[in-house]
Length: 395
Image (tube, helix red, strand yellow):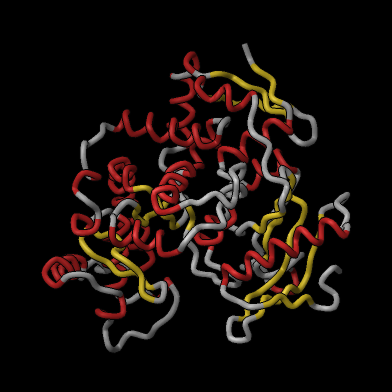
């Protein structure tokens, strides 16, 4: 029998799965931080620091006792987390590493084919040389082995050794041992991740089953396409085949979208109590990262919350609807708008440039007080001393 889940319940359930229904001030600690990232599945890494780096803001928006030092320790000292790719660069629990080996195998041939077109014939001539250097001499950064006659530039202008480092990282031979000013430090994977994370080996069928179940658990309810997109580990067809094979062991649910339509999805049976009676999320306003996992699947977020969000970094400035790097605002179970702001660390100021509220959301005194309280919390976390609201910030 198919279970009907109304829109509000679906939103609450998804927020709970995304760690946004928990008390934001409950002491986290290092163990709690690892548990939170395991619950989320991964957190996206991004270098932009308009206010705060994406991975830090994703964690802070869920728990405001989060300490950056704990994340560094889990990555660089404990080996409890590793950096690799989902749909983009991400921090991932090391207990998942054995499953990522299947991604390494799948990508190796594809990378060679793609990069050969990009770099040309013979681009891989330094691969063995670079691997041997790291093996014999220890961790390196790309700048340590750059050719003297190479001109710097973006990814399209990587020097050969940088290409080799990235290739060995993408295919699992190297891991990120740390970062210096956000630049990657590469080392042999076996020297970065504890040995117990490498075993046991899993078959391809076990890999597909784990990837689909792990994605569905973290989404709460999903279609095959949403399952495939979550980690970007399995193909859409593999997810579709898994769903068909497991249909009798899954619970079909109809999710009511924000516009009243019904969308057939599936859930794991042990998730039904949480789907039927999810906790109400905190009423406070929270500033989300543009890369927050709640919004990673833009279409899903729009169906559930009625919130259309696109990052306009690569949109020419005259064509931007909002701004270069605009932050979504979550209030309770509603995405109520977006805000344009930037941290000026030299001046110690968070400059708030513009606020856009969604249709039907009022800029009441109480709501603006809640927003200011959140911006004060974010300012302290970012390390600036005060907030500067521009004269026309409310539009």
